[in-house]
Image (cartoon, rainbow, N blue to C red; front, side, top):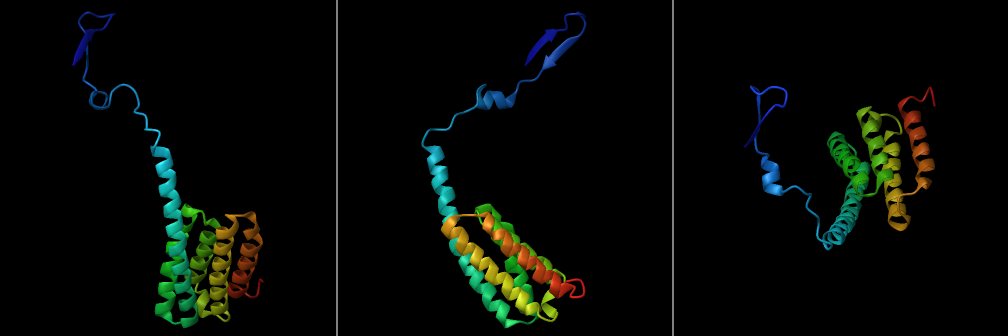
Length: 164
């Protein structure tokens, strides 16, 4: 512990406790060894590839649930779409995540129980599959926007047909 007297008043003593972090880490920031960044890049690439395979499995499950129907199927459909919504953007499938978000909103609004609601659910699943294939082939592209706009129109038409 260091102490010193304030320059303007000899009766005031300033006490500085030791900095435990500096004593443990040191004064400079540690540097990463040169082999670490390529290792991290390889790990991220492997994680993205594993997620791509996982997303394929989730899309197959969504397709089966979309044709199955029923309240239990709708709950499971929502759970899977919600998971895709949260994970897809992290691994470079932003448009797929956006479509899953639209599907979640559609389910929350009671869309599957309405006339042509099942068709819109299937349209969401087919759109996610097409966008995922596009992301695999070309990466995330701006070409997804027309699909997402058309999907939004279909959702509006089913949820409020008088305004569509």
